[in-house]
Image 1 (tube, rainbow, N blue to C red):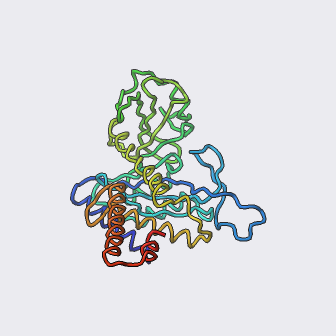
Image 2 (tube, rainbow, N blue to C red; image 1 turned 90 degrees about the vertical axis):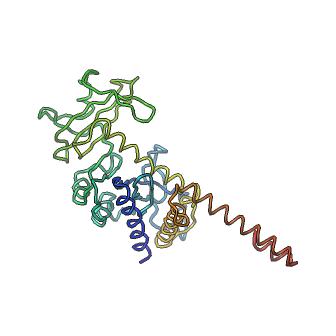
Image 3 (spheres, rainbow, N blue to C red; image 1 turned 180 degrees about the vertical axis):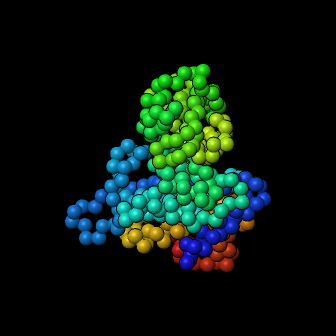
Length: 317
């Protein structure tokens, strides 16, 4: 199957990078919506498997296809392992758990990075069996058990004092971070980081929480790993701006699946170029430049050979 060949190629590239650098594999998961116009009730051939989905970006229901994407990354190299349509026949949790089960065990400690939707005990267990600890965002109403007392994370955060926290720099911003280690709802033992921006301590709207099942990592190391999850957001933006994942007019689910597979292949080609690993933007620009040069060369040769104008216009049509 072409999909299996593509997956194996990506695994070979990423795990080779692990062997060379000793850096961890990052399995990054998130979902996005390919928006479409809702068809009228009289439409004879509506787009298959399109539904209303809650869009966090638009903060409202959005009609279209929701796709769960799985990125494998190592040492700055980011490749799209799979993009799977969520059509409500199978939960997103089960989709990602299936991906965890098919991944090979990396030779070094590695991490599964996700947002709060995927920080479940079911996924944490599935990934730890394959050598991946979980680092993910946590909903602030998630139940934790400090000193054996059951309470929501946001409620517990109100009792935290600045002297109980560490001031940690993440990127170019600073945060007051409190570290709790113990049980939380669905996970037997993990580190929970409760975080406020430096200038918004005890501001409930600025509160963020994160969970890490690798309890050996420090308060500084956990955010440093988690920020690498941003690469999947860049992948979504690139996929919508370049291969136009949100502008296709294909109606059948099978056709859409094939289009997404081709898009993943294009992403791989741009990131690997001619055997040289590079960011997607660099590879995409390189291929665009080559295509433009080939067109100009062809037009020049047509002129030199006195080809008719129609033959040249067919190229740019």
